[in-house]
Amino acid sequence: MQLKKFSLLISIMLILSFTFASEYDIINKELKIEGKFFDSLSELEKIELEKDILVGYLLNLQEIDPKLSYSTLGTMRNYNLIQQFCRELGYYLKKLGIDFVVFGNLQTSNKQSENPQEFISDSPYLISEVIYRMIRGFETSGVLPVIIVSSNDNKNAVDSLLLKCGSFYSYSEDLKGVDLIFDGELVHLESNNFFMLPWSYGEGNLREKIQEIINNTTTSLL
Image (cartoon, rainbow, N blue to C red; front, side):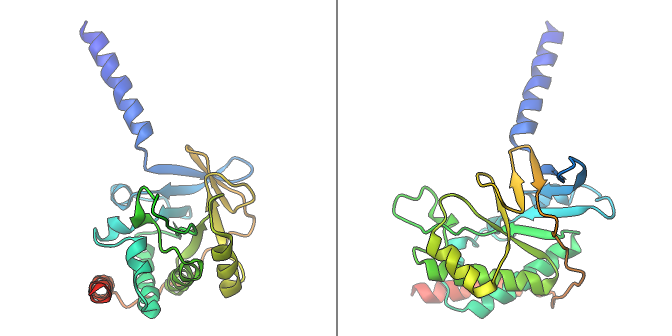
């Protein structure tokens, strides 16, 4: 009886660890492991990373600060501050050993959205401006920016972003032909030209920039 209970407990733990996994292997086209991909900074901080491996992070703004979200950035009109914030965030991530950050939402928000905090705006052009400033901030810090794309993206937002930056690295869970594909278990590196940025730059004032954003957002809502 005790053995059955123990076996059941192990099975439940395995199911939970799979369901809530936050660390994934990055594999190349030859199915060789290139690195690790995380969707939790707390998980990343628990381990010692191997040297010379590719490390990526799926950005969760509320993990950085509970008051931050894509809709928070979308309500701002201080785009320079958004860029500065991402530069400092990238600088912080770079010190943790992260090489690239996956982020963004090119879908327009609507009244039917289950989680409005995940959307930047209902304006395609405002969406592209916010994402563009985030790209530039991360690039300046030395962390490679990779944009989340999906079949539900707004075409005008995508086209507007391409006009601003020419091209960008992409990540998807439902599209092919992107640089990184996540299948639920592994991150597939499809690009042959996925280059890391060799520099690291920032002023070390991430907390100040977060507070500026919160103050700016509060003011804009008054």
